[in-house]
Each structure stands twice: as C-alpha cells, then as structure tokens.
Amino acid sequence: KEMQEAEVSEKDAQVDYETLMEDAGSKRAADAKSLTEKEGAKADTEEALETEKGKKAETSTELMGTVKYIMGLHGECDWLLKYFEARKEARASEVDSLTNAKAVLSGADFSLIQRNARARKFLHH
Image (tube, rainbow, N blue to C red; front, side, top):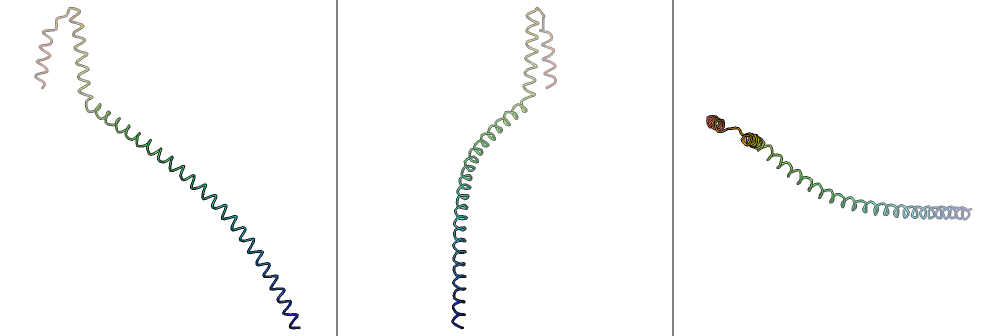
C-alpha cells in the first residue's frame, strides 16, 4: 500500500512538474515577446527623440534670428522716437523754405519777414 501511495504521489509530482515546466515555458515565451515589443517601442521613441532634437535645434536657430531681428527693429524705433521732434522741425522748416522759395519765384519779397523770423527765433533761444 505504501508503494502504491508513493507511485501515485510520484505521478502527481511528475504531472505538477510538467505543468510547472509548461507554464514556465509559456511565461518565458510571453516575456520574450513582451521584451521584443518593448525594445521596438524604445527604438521608435529614441528615433522620435532624435527627430525632435533636430527640430528643436532648427527652431532655436530660427528663434535666435527672430530675436536678433526684433532687437534691430527696437533699436531703429528707439532712434526714430529719439529724433522725431528734430526731424519734425526739420521737415517743417523745409516746407516753409519751399513755400517761401515758391513765393519768391512768384515775385513776393520776403526779406523783411525773414529778418523778423530770425529775430523772434533768436529771442526764443
């Protein structure tokens, strides 16, 4: 009787061992498949990362160019604002001179008016 129990116990142990080995083989196959998929995903992600790094470098270069351009515009605007009044006065003076020149060519005499304008300008400064 002990011999039969030992044989049954051994057969049960053998079946358990074979089941365990099948399960382990299935798990190894699933793990290998999962590892392959993860390696593929990693490779795709690394490729995408390199692509994005390239895009970032291009965008950074473009940004630096844009910032440089904006700084140039800012400098020009500052200059225009700084000298606006002087340029406005110069333009007004030119218009006056052209108007007077046209009047002189038409026969007007501005010698007296010019002296008064110079005297007023001298007194204001």
